[in-house]
Each structure stands twice: as structure tokens, then as C-alpha cells.
Amino acid sequence: MYPFFFDWTFLLLIPALMLAFYAQMRVRSAYERYSRMRAGSGMTGAQVARQLLDRNGLSNVVVEKTSGVLSDHYDPRKQVLRLSEAIYSSNSIAALGVAAHETGHALQHGTGYLPLMLRNNFVPVVNLGTSLAFPLFFIGFLFRGPILMDIGIILFSLAVVFHLITLPVEFDASRRALGLLAREGYLRRDEVGSARAVLNAAAWTYVAAAAVAAVQLVRLLLLRGQRD
Image 1: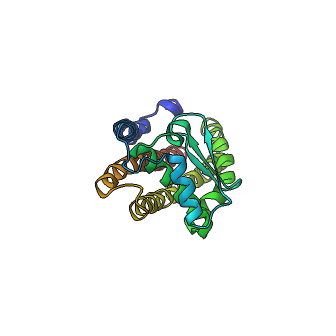
Image 2 (image 1 turned 120 degrees about the vertical axis):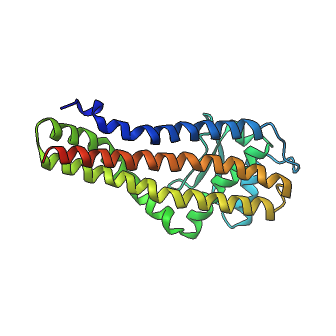
Image 3 (image 1 turned 90 degrees about the vertical axis):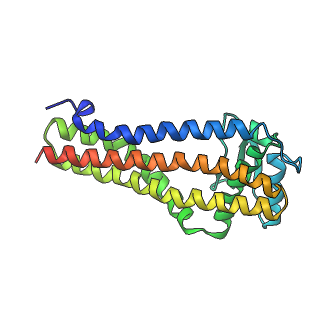
């Protein structure tokens, strides 16, 4: 029997890992390209986010700067929209697209968008599950403990569900973002396509993450079958 991390089922991961690499390269390329193109409105990511929030009844949501590159996110617990410095202070098409996307998450939270609510509720369970899934499965695999393997599979299945729920959340946030940027006049019609290219590229990273998780689950199931 091959060691757990070097068995033949690892070959199944190669296409998913290649997709993940492609997604990262695509989002980096799109962001670098459109971060050099200034939006005709001249507004920064922070200004656009603030105005969109205010116009949609979310004046209570704070917009603040955070460290890191593309570390932008909306924190539903504290109702804070955090933009990386490059997005916060930039008036590029990429910056406006990313800022509007994160604003889309705040709007989802404000309207009780069901997939977002489900994802938020999954977070603590998934964090615990992913930290225990592989150790439990690995111990069960080595010592022929089917119960431990089954528990590991169940816990990792929660992570797969989390990734699948994330897809509609991210796609919907991008849809809202592009609609807001066009309707409110922050981007011209010819600029919306550029923002869409950035957000579509980012969406591929979530698709790739879901694919990697799904293939990992298949691996666990195959390895579990070898122990029957």
C-alpha cells in the first residue's frame, strides 16, 4: 500500500490543481491590467463603496482600510467593509470593481440573502471540521479504524458543501456590483466590461477551490474503500 499522501489517487488532484493555478494566474493578470486603467468617474474604491452603501440604506456599515494585497472582504459580524490599500485609495477600474463586489456582500447581508446566511452559519463548523478531518481520516487509515475514517469524511464533506454554497454568493455579489457601477454611473458602458473581466477572473478562484475540495473528497472515499 502506498503512503496516504503519495497514493495513486493523488493523480486525481492534478487537473483540479492545474485549474487552481490557472485561476490564480488569470486573476493576477486581469487585476494588474485593469489596475492601470483609471475610471472616468475619478472616484476611489473607498468613495464608491461608501456612496453605494449609503444609497442602499447601509450607512451603519463602516468602510476601512486593511493591509495585504487583494485582502478585501466584508465582515458580517462587525458590519465592516475592509478594502486593501491598493483598492481603497485607487480610482482604477479594477479597484472600483473589487470595492463594488465587496459592497455587494454587504447588500446581501442587509437583505438576508439566503446563501450568504447559510455560508456565514457554516464558517465555525467548517473551520473545526477541516482542522480535524484529515488527521482523523489519516489515523483511521493507518490503524484500520473505519469509524475514524467515516468521521473524517463527514467532516470534510462539510467543507465541500461550504465551497459549493460560496459559488452563488460570489456570483451574485459580482452581478450586483456590475449593475450598481453601471446604473449609478461610476463606470461608463465601455468600462463595465473591464470590471466584469476582473470579477470573472476572481470567480474562477472560487470554482477552482470547489473543484479541489470535491476531488479531495473523492480521494477520501476511494481510500476508504480500500480499507473495506
